[in-house]
Structures are given as structure tokens and as C-alpha cells.
Length: 51
Image 1: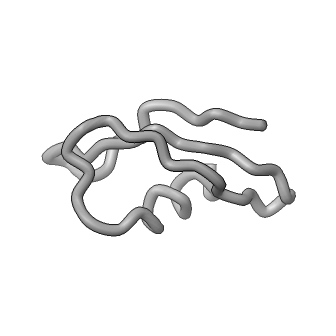
Image 2: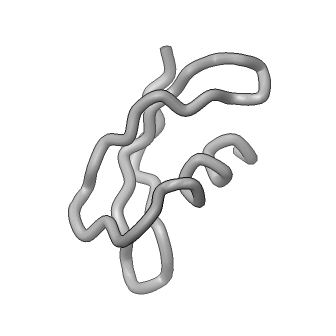
């Protein structure tokens, strides 16, 4: 969970529509992608795609 929150916070700027961001690295060394968008309450992570 911490890896996902850290990855979402690394995305700069505003994300008005759901967008896939690739190539995040977890503490264990696994690569993952996230689909996120900004909403009024903050950044919403829609899904996590692991490799």
C-alpha cells in the first residue's frame, strides 16, 4: 500500500482524466503501473497493474 501512495504522490501536475502511468518500482523490486485521476478530495488511484 505504501508503494502505491508513494507512486501516486510522485505524479506531477493535475490529472483531469484517468491516465496510466508506467514504470513505478516497489520496495521489493517489482515494477508496477497505476491508473489515476484527480478528484475534488485528492488523487484517486483507479487500478494497479503489476508485472
